[in-house]
Picture (cartoon, rainbow, N blue to C red):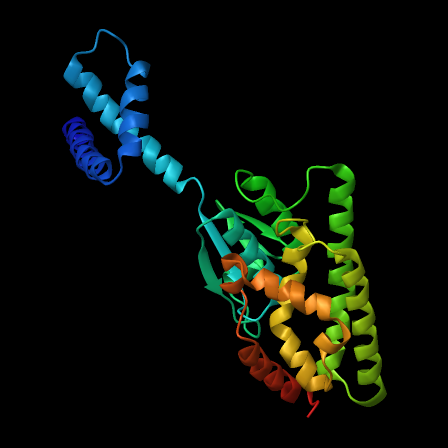
Length: 287
């Protein structure tokens, strides 16, 4: 009885695979050329034409689904996070399709705690069941895992080191300083604004006359820095100052980045971010 059931399952799967294969072939000629021609060479010559064809169909479907399912990508993120936006830009630059999982940072999900048990923070990239944490590390991982399109880090070792240096500078300086702009008042606020402008001027100097930090193309430092652009309105409004008046090259660079679809679709609405910041200020007792 078990043997008959097993034979039935095999036959059923073969028929199902054939139907799926024909639907797939009708949708794209690429697989017809790639799979139907190359795969039969794997089969032994003593098989009949029909047997070889059935095996070709099954193998083609198997390879197709293996290729399709090889990259199961999920991003655990929070909409306003500039760190998560980094990863979204990197994935968009590479053309990687992924599932977005919005996280509640005040009530962290079991999945987030499982995938990032050390820091318990977003963003987390889950690639084929394995997690990668910390935004800059994730961006480097994305660059390495999907090498075929839009390289983010330069190939030259010195230039790679410089890119990592400036991305680290942004992580250590920009975020901590700008947080003080919307969480403090009085002298501490004025000091934070002054420190922020000094950071931006250093970043202007590094940019120089290049269109992007990556040169002619969007690069690693651009991906690390540009997500903060959608927070600029909140900084300026909370701190009563103008970034463009102090650092026009930074604004021109950011607007140039926004012309790229990978950036414009990833960054959030600045006024929506500002409303979120106002909620945070109330929570922190700033207002």
